[in-house]
Image (cartoon, rainbow over all chains, first blue to last red; front, side, top):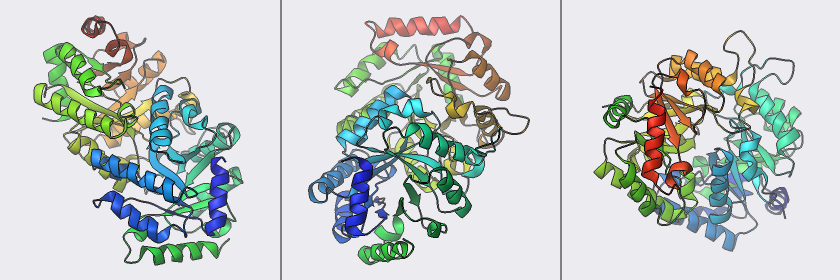
Length: 246
Length: 246
């Protein structure tokens, strides 16, 4: 089963496009995550730990990340796991990152920087069973500094559009690519959907623009869910809100 | 003492612009690194572990990275340490990465992706005492896919040139920015030097283009030094070869 098949299966089984960001630094991080997982596993499509919040705890953080992954694989092997690592180095180094994230930690997918180009990311892209989620247009206020740059020539107009186009036309040979597309800018998500009509988007943060999408989305929420009084209720609410538009 | 002062002092003290990439995965990584450090510490300006090679060893790798950093700070506190991490996330997440790399591990500098823009990297840029080494033009064969893209308008012509220009004009408020500039493409290093005449470049791999530089360089070599029969001799050779052009 490849990444997209696994994703489709869990979206269908749990009737949910929700991704929960496991981004707490509260010790023990494993116990914190286990509680969130136990409360929400039948309501989600994916869990997405951001590696920064584990690295900041040093060895203990890596240990808790590993325990979290072991727990997920043992108890909920059908739920998709995404390493929000935003990696991107030269090829020989990416080979080590791919081994760390896919083989040692056992993630199904990873988020990646496009700046070094397809050739550098080949160690990830070659993994037919794993998902490669490429940063295309991000949610932060300063995302336009480079991502919106107008390119010389006719189409595509902007850097983020060329990233999407290259991923669709060339990087996706193994049909294992996804794009990070923030919902912050509804026009942007519509533009990218035109270029990548059939590709799944990982959408950080909730926002406008969802109603133009019929499928191929995973919607992430982190702090709003994991720090809620009732994480299960909050997850259910998000799932139902998204499903209204499906 | 800020980052550039520390760098200038060690370049002057050891009469060397050499950076040694501590990129072995041979266990124990700490013992391996200690041996390299013991043999070369009076010949180098900086040590640069690439985090991928520690993450791939899991907790043990993080432990050995920490031991390496502790050893360097205790025995050679004047040598610059660079976390080759190529990080880049949204601001709140970068705050955790900065804490992990600068405060927990104790590095002097970190390599960073520009794709999310200055605003996202502010948690690194705000650290006046630390070096922020921004990926500008990389050494890999596929680097041109995005980095060389022609931009609409007059100047600068290409994406990598705009990255350099924005870093010089706006990101470098605390005078703590450097650029990653590969020596693979001599024309490229000359173009960036025009835009950033006074900024230090971290140059991965040895190549042409060095003789056009009078200062403001750190030249990295990893495998060629650390896996050499005689790492000290190899380091000395590189140092002397570089110094011919100074």
